[in-house]
Each structure stands twice: as C-alpha cells, then as structure tokens.
Length: 569
Ligand code: BGC
Image (cartoon, rainbow, N blue to C red; front, side, top):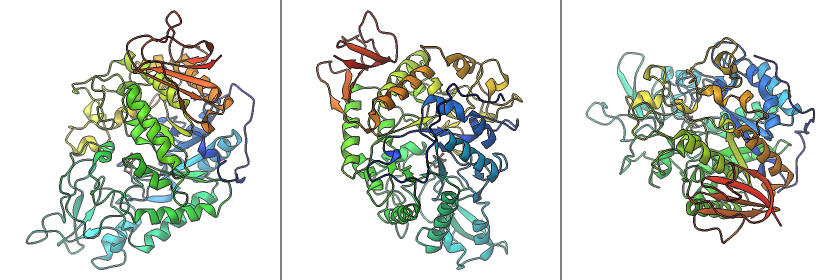
C-alpha cells in the first residue's frame, strides 16, 4: 500500500484535553466519518482491513475535511457479526492489529486534527466471551448465569422457548443450552445472533464492567463512543410475549416496531446513560457518547440526549426519508425541534454499515423501500445507478449544509453504490443466513472501498485480496480517479465540507425560503442559501454567487435532482 501523503501541510492538531464551555463542544457541529475497519484499508495483505491500514490512509480523511472518525468494532471477536460480537472489550483482534497499533492510529489522528470515536457494544457480547463461558460452566442459580438472560423454557419439559421473541437477524431470539452433565438446560436470550448473548442489565456487576471498559478507552485517549443498540439493554420484567411479532428484516425495521416491544426503549435504559455520562464527565476534552437508538418519533429519540445522558443520537428518521421535498422539510423541522428541546444538536446521516448505500437507495423505484433489507441478484427492485448517484450527490449536499453534526459512511464521498451481485457463498451477514437467504442483508454496503483504480484490489490491499469481492465498476469510483477532478463526487464533498467550515454552517440555523415550488427544499443557513430540487422540472435560481452545485446547471436553471449552495445578493 502506498504511503499516504496529504495534499496540504496545514495541521489542525488540537489539545484533546481541552474542555469547552457548555454549548461550544466540538461534537455539536462535527462531521464524523465512519470507518468500517474490515473494508477501509488492509496493510497486512490478508484481505481484511486493519488498524495499520487505517493509519496509513488517515491523511486522505484530513484532506476530505472531516473532524472525527468513528471506528466500527476492532476488538477481539470471533467475527460472527463482523466484530459486533465482542469476546474482549479491552483488546484488539489480531486480524486488525494490536493495542499498540491503536495507539499509533489515535496519535496520528490527533496530530492530523481528527478525533477518534470507538464503537461500544453493551447489549450483548460474544458467546466466546469468558463471561459467557463462565456462565455456562457455573451452572443454574450461579452469579455468573445472572450476568445474562437465562430463562427456563415453556412446555412440559422446557422444550419451548420462554417467549415468542424473534431475533432481529431472523429466527428465534432464544437458544437452549445443554448442561455439563448432558441434560437439556435453560434458554438464553439473543436479540441478535445466537453468538450474541444479551447481558442482564438489571445486574449491577454488568454496570461495573462497562464503567471499567469506558475508562480503559478514555484513558487511552479516545474522544468518545458510538454506543451500539442503545435502545436495547433493558428488557421489560417478566419478558412478556410480543403481541404482534415483526417480520425479520434487519435493524431499521425495528424502528417501526410498536412501542410496546418489551426489549426496546425501556425507561430504565436511561439510568445507564446517566451513569456513563458521569464517567465521561470525569475526563477533560469534551468526550462524546453517540446513541445508535432506532427509536421513533424523533421526540422520543431525543430522550437519549437529555443533558445528563448521551450527547448525540443518530437521526435514523432522516436516513429513512425518501428524496421528496415535503418529507425532507418535515423531517428537518421535526429533528431540529426535537433535539433543540433537550439542548442537543441534531445529527444527520444517510448511510452506514447496516443499510443500503444511499447512492443505490435513491435509485430504487420504491421510494420508501426499507433501508436495511439489502439488495441482491434476485431482488425485484434494482437501482438505477445514474439516477441514484445524482440524487445521492444532491442529498449529501443538502445534508452537509444543515446545522448540527453529520455522519458520513466510508465510500459515500466516492458515490459508491451498493454491491448487488454478490454470490450467496461469499455473503457473511448473519441476517442472510438466518433468513435462509430471504433477506440479503448488509454485505453489499460493506465491500472494501477502492483507492487506486489500477492497483490490486483497487489499492485496498497490496496483495489484491479482499474479504468480499469488489466489482470491476469500483475502478471508475476509485479515489485517484476523482481527486482533483472538479465534477467528481469526492471534490463535491471536499468543497461542501470546506464551505461548511468556512461559513460555520454546523453552528448555524435553518430558515426556510419560499417561492421555489413544492418539489424544492430551499433554506438559508447563515450566508448560504441551499436549494435542492427533488422534482422533475428545472427551477429558476436567485441571483448570487454559486458556492457549489451537486450537478451541472441547465442554462442557469436548477435541474432535477440537483442541489446548489449560493451566496445570494
Ligand atoms: C450494529 C450492527 C450489529 C448489531 C448487533 C447494530 O446496531 O450497527 O452492525 O449487527 O448492532 O450488534
């Protein structure tokens, strides 16, 4: 892998021990780039990305203009759910490197002015974690078993699961164990894969372990945590049956699950976030907790970011909004109102490692298609690549103009589409396997990203290896094809992030502009007017200086599926 050189010598290094006064914290307006370590850059040549690979490529993220990186899990794990099945929270999995590699990465990122957020998975661990092994070995009634959710089965001999809960990845949410003496034992709960036993968060021992894990990484200099399944953790006492069981369809479908789902959004979960808030407050440097909570409506998601809880929550309502002006205006209003009411910034996100890339989502004919079910060779609705990219560029330009904090997912700055043509046998997402291939799942957004069009595995790995096969079309999306090319998606993102910083859009506010018609989202944030045309008819633009355009104008008009930023006269 070529050693990265950055295009600028400017250094934005910061003092990560410095605390700002309340209201001025960096995360309120930050652009945070999600690195999916398996698929970002592979220094070892084994075809799986690693920490050393990330360190070598960090300069390109500084050049992109982001403020922070969030790393999906790189902890010890048997990788049955790509690292979201952790077997040691305080060590690096050998496939990704070592703790020393992490320290080097963190140091390099800070030198470049990039903060580092790590992913913490508190709802469950891996069934290979010594805590779960101890629980199996210790036997019924032991303190070790009480760290997890073991229950006797129903039926005459306990042969039926304790309730009717289904795994988010498909199939039953309970697995029966066999005791050491060979007799059938109780069942344990796993809201996700069988290999991901849920913790019993009613047990104070679990609380103490996670405080220690937080401190371990805070002491190592991380700037915060993205908290996995932050609407889970607490289950309703008695574990009642769900009246209407949702079809397995992936994480995003849990957003529409009825309020009474007894394992989501239980009120006691907020006590955990208050406890974690206090742990972070022991440290200087505005450390941040960001909730992955698939909760609607936004006013409810905002409960996760009350002033003594977390600091940010992903805005999945925004992610799920189709390319439609009325819907976009409404979700932007609702987001700002909901988060402002609790004194938190709104966040914005269009893609991540769990959903179909937005460059493909916007090219589907079903505007409201679930973002999380995946697309594969047999899907009836296949995206129109050109249309999807055009809309994605327009949607990203709109998102980057909004006040608050924006999350980008690796590869979206290249306009990467979802990879659809993946053979069944290469797919790794447990969703695909647990639904017998009915739900394609998330492999298509996780394919290693292209850096250099002519290099082996497009520069992902010198060896040419890649844990998921990259399609030939990735060559045209490679970073080296786009860098310095004024019409490219990469240059659009760079220009947007530079202008966002220059005009302080992240700390600005939204005022709606009228008179552009019902298909147009038009707003003003500080000096910048943002006009996004979601309709089919070109619209007239006000006079002014064009700061950026997501696509070419047509005789001065704003064409379909295009966004501009203008400094109006
Ligand atoms: C993560 C997923 C993961 C699941 C279980 C999610 O919310 O983002 O990738 O499969 O949690 O840990």
